[in-house]
Length: 125
Image (cartoon, rainbow, N blue to C red; front, side, top):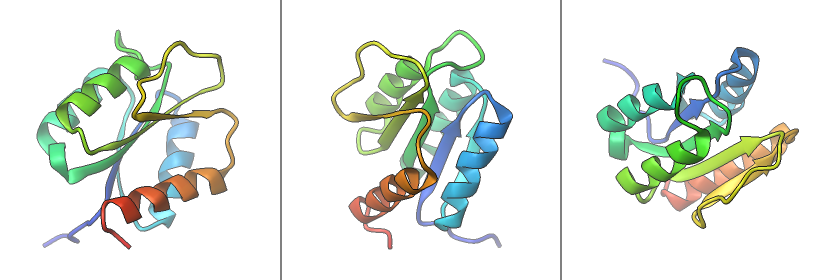
């Protein structure tokens, strides 16, 4: 029987190096990480994992037809309590009110702080 994770984060990033880096940062905070390269794949994970997910980290530019902003909107509709961080190195359009935007390049410590804030909010220490 596998480990019962208390905090699961979905990392959606099409750049493998960035995806691995972000995943390592979250794993260092004892979080279970699921990785996707496209918004379409992330929607499938959302449908299967749903309430188990407590956080998503999404790049704005993804593989496939869906942008990270569109994915963030879908995620908040399906799992209203999920914490969503959207990131980009470019200027982006409008971000939903309940979604955090982190401009690249961000520092790993900034990401860790947001992860810890999410854990506290969801009652995970």
